[in-house]
Length: 339
Image 1 (cartoon, rainbow, N blue to C red):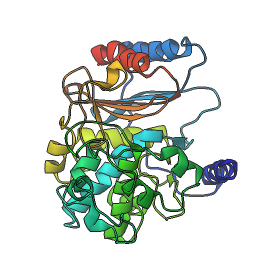
Image 2: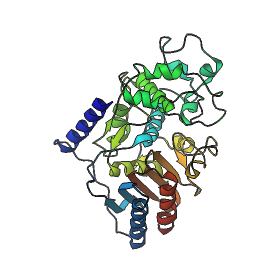
Image 3: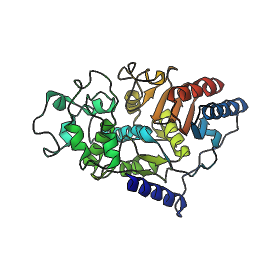
Image 4: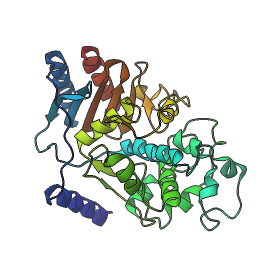
């Protein structure tokens, strides 16, 4: 694990220092005093939460950058790990695969894996599990193998996940499990022949001017899917803007709007989940917020991108914070009303 972390850190440092094309800029708008004051208050709120840290905060409105702030030792060029915010990128890769006619969300997961990768005896639950169940965290898979997969101790994480058994019948209820996202990443590679990162580089990253990114892979050759993506906070904000514009970028519909009709709506009740900020429903690897119409890309330790359609705004932030509910509420109660 230590060797893996060191290699990742070295790769990120190398990516930050080598002579490579910079990400395309975001148009800059006029600062809004009340928004800047509210965003500064969010910085203060998080810093007063004991040992919690806020690394960066960006506000876009009407497609323009109106606020940007970084903590000491952080910068616009830093490739910040997104943790589970990576999941929304994986779901978006599935959206592009649907658009390309490579799969549908109703396809059964077993369709994409060989007999060697599947258990010798298929349970009814396994045969029923669909891509949509993976997208909505309703697969019912018993074990979350994130730690073992991250540590590299599993030779075939996808096979292990598919053999882990079931807590409940797929589609019947919500249970957050990062292996759902890992399996989606594996499926992208199986239907495209390239990694999810490479697929998104063509479909999403390059059109949005996101030229610098790094996504960790397993020994199987799949991107982690549910975690492990590193991009800048500005690129994170661009992803939020892409969702806000429902797949439109520079006048081109990159991803069909019908995908967003499904991806951004509530598919399953998450009210039983831990934390008040996580009980408003779940879409395709994306969370709804307490304010109707506001949704959120969400990663551990407060890697958040809030999409606020009624305000035509995006708020992206990266932190190291173990108080997610308080952080979410700080943004919604301070910044949202001032936009």
